[in-house]
Length: 415
Image (tube, rainbow, N blue to C red; front, side, top):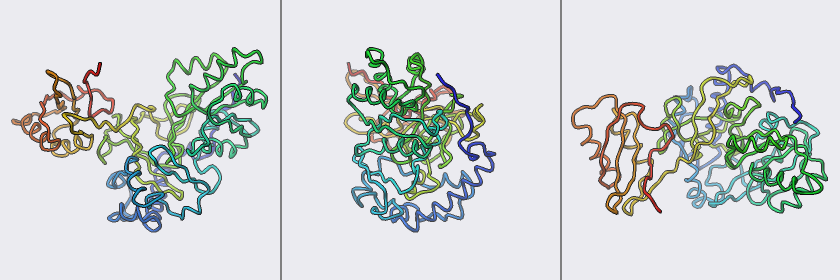
């Protein structure tokens, strides 16, 4: 498969980390000020926040997290964007309605989703023809990749979803060198092409998203002669992180500040711990500030060997929304976060829901370096007060619980 030099997209990617932090925090202060002045929803959420007082990550962590799940209610109360948009809806380029339903705005401008950076890292260059199989219908996935490819100087075949035979024929006739879409549909096209007398689509490289890309699938795609990298984005934020040819974690985009917080809380997770991806956009008409994506990940230490110096993520590790129904009542991650707040001597906690004698049972597993007298009883009492349900408490040494971001584990068998 043809290889291309892995040169940076721009100077932002190789900035000194301290310079990036200074410039990002300065942009953050401007974004918070604009949000408060021009978006009524943010004016309410950030009422107590003074933009000029945000001088560090620790200051940012004092702002509330607004989670994706809250958008439905906010948008229902104040359609279409819940008061979180800094311009009139008519000033946008496009409006999308994703499942939920959640409305997502597309501001006017070139590459507003910032996808050109990820495409460039994946080897796409001016003059390439890109077969884009993300949906163009109501959701922004298709236009996110489309606008990024065109910003690079690529031509785009807007294939959308479905109709495999027609897509294969179109890609082959157009001479598309690149593919954007899900990895599973890429595999479908390549396999169909192997069976087709006219041959395969001729893709040389691909940027995939929307699904997991396990090593086995990456290897299977490579057997077709396609160089495949992945990126992580959302309909709300655009590009969040992307792979480089080094393929060692996902490098965070330069257009946002990213944090990992403990599920159900506003507090940053300790370094290396799996938690919820929380992102703040540093510019744009949709000033999402400490936006909780609901996705789990963790930060990889150090910088990528490719020379890009921004923070790296381990990749998508699951969902942070672990709400579980126990004895007819929902138990939520926010309640476990409240338990930790009440008992600072507990470093980490995990509520395991099981069945005993046909009845739901709860066990709160806690890591604690110190075990003062009465801790187990106090935790059991707090568990009942917070969840309105009784449960057992088991204390463990630090490091005993899995580092997988789960604070509620449903261990019941449904067979």
